[in-house]
Image (tube, rainbow, N blue to C red; front, side):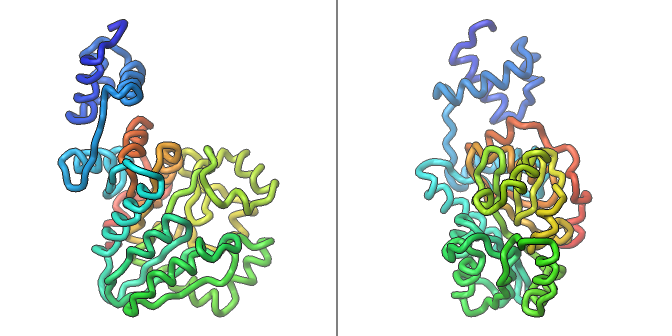
Length: 326
């Protein structure tokens, strides 16, 4: 198959996307290497030979969600349509994440939220919740109140059945000593004390490389250099991960005021809401960390994630920990 025809590329795509055949199996059938199969799959999408349309509730969406969860080693994935503008995609992801979170909460539960544009959209859709407690998972980044976790809390607590606890402190203090003093402040400490009882956490995923995170603008040159040296790939709650999902320690971590990786590992349900093909390597790193149980993303990001190496062994979460805690 020196020159693959549109029909051959279509058949390869059908076997891969619809029959769940591996690239090795397909390569053996057509006399190709798995790398050539991967290139032809990409060529099919780029040239419009393969057109995937995902609509809510159809069989293909369910198949893609199931395949992605298996590929990333997650309990579940929810995939939405990537058609339309970036804002429209974000709103679909937010709606799916909010709907899923609502199914997990029962009266008296405590849940945590982070910050950012996607989280604000989720907060606006977290309505009709049972009487529960919403806890801010991180300090505040920058001085734009519209993007702060406090604003997300305000949206959620518009429903009077939900109480809220905020963290009135920066995500990153100026020094480890300053962070220690802030964590010990009675008002802040009383919020942090609720982390062990969290049943659910909802957050977004930031990408360090390529840079799709608002945090870079608020870090010093020294912080940026350290993260680059440590091959940072993803960020969750100010927790930076390398491509293998390992947590990057150092001065920046000591200055962070947020839920920790250990805190996340104890939470039965950790939902990450993140889309976009460029963010795929960061999402994969987050999955490899073992900190997530569920991903909500769009179909194009899902396809890009399926092209990456599968998650074999999460770096942190012990197998079955989340199920045991449920």
